[in-house]
Length: 497
Image (tube, rainbow, N blue to C red; front, side, top):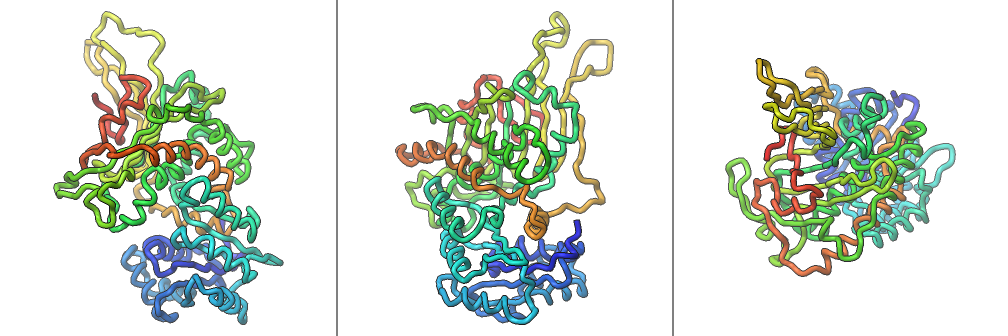
């Protein structure tokens, strides 16, 4: 919906950084183009760089042209840039927050409704929240104040709870927007629409008909120049704790009583609370980790993880993580959910793969049909956002032979431009829609699920298993499967043994 009646100030911490360059400023520009920003809305960029207003606007202009050159209309870009001001300061300086409060209060420049966006490293979250709170910038009267916190929300259960205590001292939960940009992707939201706006599959969406579920996120890229960051993070924290567990909740949740934020989030928390705890001594049966070794990506030789800059030569940090989880409730009892993520894999792919059970009786004994292949339902998230159902059909001809075919539905028309996840989430923060943001009990429960694995891996001696860059990961990770016939579903391409 249009936000014409809600002028707002967007205050971006870390506005000179990479997230601002490649995501936030281009997304705000697209919202402006779409008429979603009130004419009086302003953007205040904060950073340590020695810039003034004109320097900042020039940088943002370059970022937008670099990101979307075809969309950079001169007049529209000039209108957007006029919204932007810059304030230099050091996040560690208490005087900076008083100066920020004074800047926002001066004259009629900045609307009192405000979103504070923390596009900064997680180590700075606590001090910045405390600084804003002590300067009175979260206080609400006839206006609202909201805080957007990027992931990771803590690095383990203890740090997440410590950060939550800081938030609780300065804000109400309703003011906090914990962002997971994955939930802003159109296809992810389509999981909800697909499940709850269509009734034909609901009778099949349970343990009686579904054999298992796979959720995969693979990347062809390595860690780039982020060795120091990744050494303290790893694949389990980086992708599974947030993105993939969130996808699992959307696949497995019960229908909420409404699509309002709290009803939706209540059902997601129920799923997380129903995940079976790991029994003592059985973590290796449910979790697997590995690191990429040297290999080839798109014909180019690439180094292994241990050869990357700022990575310890004896590092046990995982670049590949796979889990097997069970949801102990009426709908999903006994159905394994396999979650997997990895860097330097064969290709970039995000996919939800749902395999249905085989028919209870083989009807084609004594015919040319020796065995039936399983039916799959596939939800492609990236790079192809689509819905595919794989079924068995008879081949043309006199003989009774079969083949696999698929029913495909693209989720975006050829003339429909993709919407970046940040566009949707930035607009939701202005409009006060928290449906696609994480409530704290979701975060806490996710850390509780993974804490035993993190502890086990921390205590387990190295070395860690490896896989060749450019492959689909270690073959040994198949040991997580409940059945020998199960195979990882890597992409939308048909699965082959």
